[in-house]
Image (cartoon, rainbow, N blue to C red):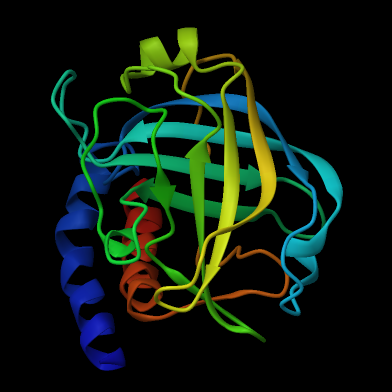
Length: 224
């Protein structure tokens, strides 16, 4: 299984590298909007991961994007990328529009509105076993996922960050993410790497992590 995931990632790296060269180093999620944000960790489950238990308040950078770059109003696989630029290295979270059920949490779901449910299709190894993260809107709000409407309507949006243990564990809230103003330039060159930059106490693991590693390498090579 491990070798199959790595092999699939290496095979995918070839077309992704070509796309990266054509899309200025962004083979996926080429169009997005970057906003300032604040992450407030109020204290999550005591599963041996100090980063989840908080409490803490720290600045963040968020990018909302369309995965394939399809023109709106077509549905697309949406992305919510979060960077916490603190400590010796940043913490990067990459979440994709997904279902919220026990079976659909692993499935990417194309969406139209940026304010929707996102999940980490990649698992994280921890002392408590495999964990997965999710972000869900704190209240209904309609924000079309194209960069222009995101920049105009997304500021002030609040997501609740959740964590679940195992394949079917209950979602447990541990933080709130509040989006602020869009940064200058709308979509500056911010690169996220969830494999290299996991939260402290967690390790990117599983088939998706092994698939993503060569894909990220291809994107970096395409950027150069």
